[in-house]
Image: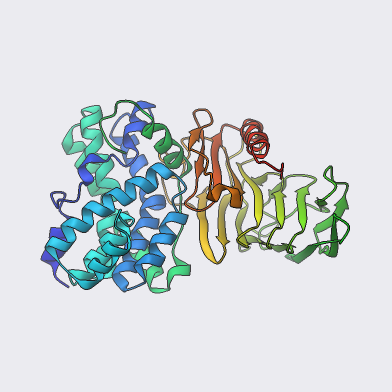
Amino acid sequence: MSRAALLVLADGRFPAGGHAHSGGAEPAVAEGRIRDADSLASFCRGRLHTAGLTAAALAAAAAHGVDPLALDEAADARTPSPALRATARKLGRQMMRAARATWPSPDLDALASARPRGAHQPVVLGLTARSAGLGPEDAAHCVAYETVSGPATAVVRLLSLDPFHATAVLARLAPELDRVAEQAAEAARRGIDALPAASAPLLDITAEAHAAWPVRLFAS
Amino acid sequence: MSVHARARLRAEPDGRGGTALPVLESDGPLALRRTRSPHSRYARVTVVGAMSAPLNGDRLAVEAEAADGARLTVDAAAATVALPGPRPDADPSTYAVDLTVGEGAALHWLPEQLVSARGSRLHQTTRVQLASTARLLLREEQILGRHGEPPGALTTRLTVHRAGGPLLDQQLTYGPDAPAGWDGPAVLAGHRATGQLLLADPSFEDAPLPARLLGPTAALTPLAGPAVLVTAVAADARLLRAILDDATRELLGGLKDGF
């Protein structure tokens, strides 16, 4: 595996559009559930161990070579919110464009033509990792990190939270990120039926509320 | 001594427009009774808790099948309360529910609440196989602790397949064994009751319902397949049931043949 390729893929400046999404932090701030660095940390933990674990395992399975179309169906079944399915497919389409320019491969071409409107983003990311010569743990780490870095970055803008404090939240989560990525990669090796389906009721409910806001800072 | 019990039931069309129950097997604390159904085409079975269960270490299972063309309602006489039991070192209890719904069949699976009492550890799995023209109404409610007490450790997984493909797969993990953040702003934010109402019906294939909020803590969402899921959180069991009852009435009222 190439450590540098992992840095390129995980870089927040990788042109895959993730910066426009708050990962559910925008409605949580609006409802007063995220008010400061402590409540941000609690939000990130909850998201990491639910939606984050589920997405990381889908990515790890794609990186491991499991059929991406079967994983895309599994992702749909794990995403009851149509707003979140639309977001995942939009981000998947954007990541696919960046991935085919960066690490072209027949696998990426095949998924792009089978899902022209976008596959779920974690599936695309996992396949991208595979095309870049990276492994299931790498893909799982990328997704687990995105699960918490998106909300942390968004809350800096939404609450004018000190960026040093937001980054400290992420740094303190590092050991848990490693554990979730390991758990995801381990599940991925046991096949599609063993993939976790951890979910968070409030993320699903508030995603639908947020999608209906007439004006919002973040797309999701 | 822990309890191992497996109850089974099977519903079939009786040939006279109603539904027969050729298999109705109670086991241990899981007592099944045929009860009067308000709908003539449906058979109704009520799970009567003959003793309190599950205690930690117990292994309970229910298998129910609505064969092609059958119509079955299964409900319960009382809430299921997961309790710690006498041995502090016992394994978690398990409660496995396996449901099969055949072509043209309908199943209403409407148990009472699952209450996770302090000190209990329960792993519940509900697996459903739907034929492509099967219809399902399923409600699950998780109540975290009896009144005013902290919850036990509760994991529930709901996996639904339709025509062999995945329709819904969700796991919820709460309480002292859950990873941190389960009660935080992304997951429950202090709510102590959570519930799901799933309605799968082939008519949604051509006419899917739009997503919609049902108050500030509940949403009705169309799944990727022909089904809708209501996801709700509430402060307590009573408020949760009110949300799910309203949604049930509205959803069933919207179906053409009043399923």
